[in-house]
Length: 244
Image 1: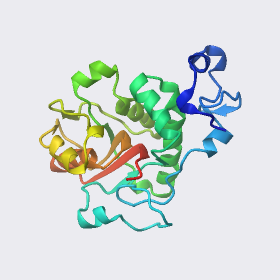
Image 2: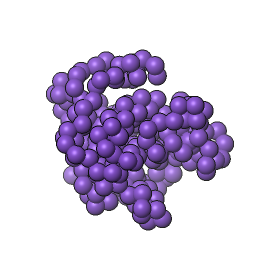
Image 3: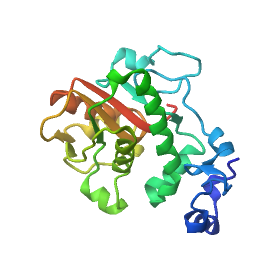
């Protein structure tokens, strides 16, 4: 079971990264891990089971067809969001260690789980499978600071698993902006106006990929830019969705 992921010691982090424990669980170091998590820790992940069908906002009750109030009042340009987990403990800590500390081993089980979820989804609905995967772009200044774009990592892994091409150059961020996590929903939308530009032709069906969907403001702006460029259907794929 997951034991204090936020407070793992430096020694445990070294063990997780060591060659001898490459197959160990990233949360409890159990040696019977699959894709980086043992069965017990995998079962502890907060599954986004009941959610809005458009933006994947977690709902408090079972629903296979309902949309949240915001998606009903202001329908987003994307057709659906697929995010298997809620952005809560321990998923938030796993993504945080990956995103801000570059510890990719913590995101590996989440990427594998998302790929498995999507594979099952498109087995039952092959007509919905996109023609291109596009990672959410990062401004070059922030990329230099962080060293990598986590959305590109995720897009590359999903491309390999689903046999769908991906491109990091089809849409670009034109300017640097305040971090979205510091802003509310309206401020996020204002912060992103005029932010993205599409380069070249785009196919009819596209999947936008990011690590976390928070308010959906970034996804709305990116999807709008892609639709304006000629896309007919845009889906959003992410590792997790915030509860609100």
